[in-house]
Structures are given as structure tokens and as C-alpha cells.
Image (cartoon, rainbow over all chains, first blue to last red; front, side):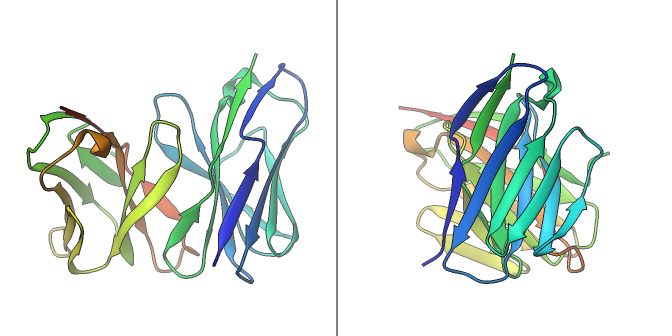
Amino acid sequence: SQTIHQWPATLVQPVGSPLSLECTVEGTSNPNLYWYRQAAGRGLQLLFYSVGIGQISSEVPQNLSASRPQDRQFILSSKKLLLSDSGFYLCAWSIGDTQYFGPGTRLTVL
Amino acid sequence: KNEVEQSPQNLTAQEGEFITINCSYSVGISALHWLQQHPGGGIVSLFMLSSGKKKHGRLIATINIQEKHSSLHITASHPRDSAVYICAVSRGTSYGKLTFGQGTILTVHP
């Protein structure tokens, strides 16, 4: 069966520090991968999606970047965090229309 | 105007009541999704439908493609149903990307 892992589960970082969130998927090949963010009191927003290794599409301009170095690995990064980067970050995968969500990372930037 | 609109934004019910959450969308879609987000943040996919009606336990989802409208019903509601319910749509040429409604916060009191 397929599973999706995200880490860390929670993270508190100072403004200006770097960020690296990792997502891995097991039990499937060549999935589409997504990073979503949910800011406090707001709905989910798609940040990045990837249809293959090294292929990244950005949905909104921002302080973040994404990479897909392996088929089932998706990384969200920032060189310098802003206060506005705080939120709940979700990784998801799909083949076809059904999406499967990871457990999420709650990021607080102080 | 958002492409996906949900109503109501907040819903409070007594245990045992029949609950309806509505979702309207303004774009062409390949599928509509109902998601459940628990207080810890994790998201579970409840339904994916492109026509008609689906039922799983006490949950029923319907969609009217002509009217671009979907409803999620919960029969015999229970406090453990308390969560945020999110409507999202996927579009056939969008690599599975989802566009989300703002969510409906459901609280069921014993």
C-alpha cells in the first residue's frame, strides 16, 4: 500500500533562517507531487507541483522553492524565512484525480 | 469571486441532527473532492465524484454537473464528526492540481 511521510511534524524557526521540509512517498511510482500551505485562518493554497524528477511548477510568487531530486522525494526550501511563511505545510501525491495527503508540518516563524 | 465557494462557513449542530454542507464552483471540472481536516491538521479524502451520488457510512455526497453544485450530507451526526470539511475541484488538464473552497467548520455537540 502507498504511504506518504513528512518531517518534521512541527518546526519553530527564527526569521531569516533557512528551511528544508521533506516529503517521501512509498508504494507508487512516478506520482504527481504537491506542496500546499494553509496559513492561519485561511484555506489551502497550492504552492508547487511536480510531474517528474526535476520538474517543478510554481503556482504563486513567494519566498520558497521546491525540488524533486528523486521520483518519490519532494523538498520545500527557503534561504531566509519570513514571518509570513508561518503556516501548515502539506505534501500530497496523486496518480489520476485522487489525492493523498501527508500528515503536515506546522511551521512557526518567530 | 473564488472559483469554489462553500456554505456555511461555520455550522453547529446537536448530536443526531442531519447536516448539509454546500459547494458551488464556477469552472469546468474533471472531479469534485470532499476532504475532512481534523483539529490536528491531517486531511483525509472522503469522496471524489464526477457525477451522481456516493455514500460511505453516514456520509453522502451528491453532485449536479449542470448546476455546478455539490452537497455533503451527514446523517445522525456525532461529536466525532466535528472537523473542517473542504470542497475542492480538479480540472482535467491541470495535472491533478486542486482548487479549494474555504472550508466549513462543523461542531457537533453531545
